[in-house]
Amino acid sequence: MSTSERPYHHGDLRAALLDAADRLLDAGGDGAVSLREVARQAGVSPTAAYRHFADKEALLAALATRHYGDFGRALAEAGSLNGMGAAYLRFALARPGRFRLIFGPLLARAAMHPELQAASAAAFATLRAAAASPEAALRAWGMVHGLAHLLLDGAIPVPDREAFIQRVLHREPEG
Amino acid sequence: MSTSERPYHHGDLRAALLDAADRLLDAGGDGAVSLREVARQAGVSPTAAYRHFADKEALLAALATRHYGDFGRALAEAGSLNGMGAAYLRFALARPGRFRLIFGPLLARAAMHPELQAASAAAFATLRAAAASPEAALRAWGMVHGLAHLLLDGAIPVPDREAFIQRVLHREPEG
DNA sequence: CTCGGATGTTGACATTGCTCACATGGGCCG
DNA sequence: CGGCCCATGTGAGCAATGTCAACATCCGAG
Image 1: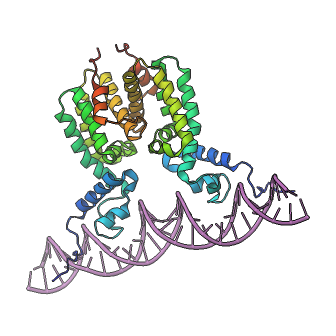
Image 2 (image 1 turned 135 degrees about the vertical axis):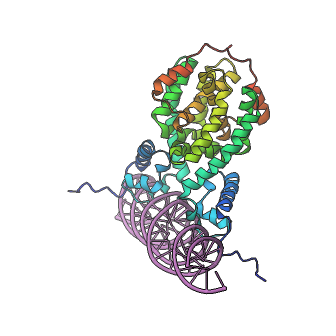
Image 3 (image 1 turned 60 degrees about the horizontal axis):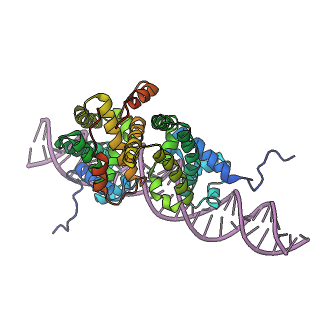
């Protein structure tokens, strides 16, 4: 009987690596995702990941692409612009690692990762479509994005985050 | 003649290290600041920095503290809330490294660096004082902060940044 | 059945943050 | 003026990381 020894070939290592990276991202935040630890969690040698991703950035780009799906869906489910703002903040607060990843400096290099670019463009389009004007969309987007960062970085200490979301987003619609 | 040999004792290594770190921060962004490279630039051994800073984070905290001064002053010089918003965005776009540093994850650990905490509190107070209500301050702050991040991360591609600032900030004051 | 390319492994290198033991010499005490 | 102490700087070394090159294994096409 093969005592649960992994076969030499893993089966679906790519997905396993992404899953492991995901766990690390959620648990330890951005910097906790190291290629070697990801490989360790997947029960595989330190360099095995290079058969599936060009480098660490490519792994993270694939992860970000995966998460843009959930994010975009959460936005789309919220009907109003206000609802989208709340969904935006809730996503950021519930999954800081994912939020920081998909909006992190990686985005600047999205041109090198076509899938990432497409995924982010889709999410952005959802947001833009719900606003009255392009400028209004940018202002709303900027506001929730900035508040998310400030909250995550501890610049705005708030006891009850959900109450904060309600309070800061509840206002008469601007002309 | 002493061929420009450094004396064993540097004189003011602490300042020299901060200057070197500053150059690296401006040139290469966040990740380009390594203790060893900083020491190299200061012409000193790799571990000399530990005589002046507990660890890398302490160095960065000192650097952030230094930059909060400039930042706060830039905000204070702008009279109106709109002017402060523009100053906020201009600072972020002109010095991405400094902006990311002073608002980065380090801020969450500000409690461990009293000087940092004081410096950031002062800058925040300046911003808060210029707004009509606490909520309005948070919304305005969030907006410029978010736009700064989105611009720096390449999420909003704009050809002329100054024109963008004018356009997005120029609106009728909200009730 | 066999052989080639895809997938994993081993070993190595450079870099980084950090610790510990040691060297140096400037400034305070007598 | 002279000697000693401790702040300051040095060096070697450790563990971890990203990445590369050479090698091992095995699945599937012919």
